[in-house]
Every structure is written in C-alpha cells, then in structure tokens.
Length: 113
Length: 113
Image (cartoon, rainbow over all chains, first blue to last red; front, side, top):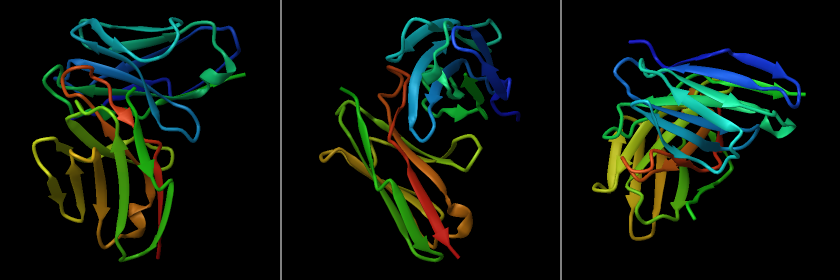
C-alpha cells in the first residue's frame, strides 16, 4: 500500500511570491491534514480537510489556504510569502472523522529568501 | 489554551538502557495520545498510541502509560538500540472533533553504542 505522497520535495521562493504544495493521501483515507514544522520546532497544525470541506484551521493568517479535491488529494497555498514561512510542510492523512491515526508524508521543504 | 509540554528536550543513554520521555497536556477533553519518531530528514512515523480508556499499552520494546488525573503520559523504550536514535514527538487530540494533533516540542534521543 502506498503511503502519503507530497510534491515537490524542495522549493525555493522569494519573499512576496506565492507557492502551492500538493499531497496525495493513503488510498481509502478521506481526511488530509497540513502541519508546519519550522527548523528545530515541533509540528504546528495548519488545516484539516475531510470529504472536500475545510473542517478546522490552526492559528495561521488567511494567506495560508488550501483545498481538497474529489479524489481526496489536497493543495496548500501560501500567498505573500514571508521569510518566517521557511519550514518543512507536512501532510498527513487518516480514515476520516471516525479515525484518529494520522500518517505523514515526507514533507515539502520550503525556503523563502 | 491547548498545550503539550514534553521533557526532556534531549536524552542520551547507553545501548541497552531504558529511555523515558514525559508529556503533559492541558485540555482535559483530550482522549487520544500518539507518539511519533522522526529520523533526520525523514517523515514522522507513528510508533504507538493510546486512548483515554486505557492506562497502558505495550508493543515489544515500546510502552506508553497514561495518567488522566494528572494529565500526563509517557513513552518508555527498553533495551535501547542505536537505531532508536531519533527525535520523538508526543501529541494529544480530541479524537474525531477538531482533527488536529497538538504536538510537544520533541525529544532528541541519542543511544550510544
């Protein structure tokens, strides 16, 4: 069974630009979660999507947004990039509302210069 | 607010010794507590989890204990091996409600051969 996949692996962007990160969940999983892991820090919850709907978001500004597609894959969009947005962005998936176990993808390393 | 405190931040043990990592959570409604292992440059891997209706769970050399009254839970690794060296994260969640996991800051475990 394939795990959670994310693309791209690495990105380098300039301050003020916009970026889109992509995630494909484990087959059969309907929930997708996004987390930010800044260097040396723990994981901070960004967004939760289930069945195409945004279910919850963390304490991040509105320039962090996303969506979930009918095939349950998801995109995370970050507008007006700032230097402090440099981090590893991790996507996780689970079996939806009734499931709690979250399985992570390899992450996208975003560097903002 | 929701918070998970994790201690220690670093832990160094000799191969064969035991390692214990402790976490305290703030939200008494939390009912799901997973532990993740993250090796350098890799994704967080779910290694064990516990739900609030049990006090202890074991899986080979790994065990987790939960004290709901004190709102803390611990990871115990026995007979440590060099391949156990990694960053370990605890997390807490209100299962099926908010979707998000609240993570501790991580413990860097070094097992010396």
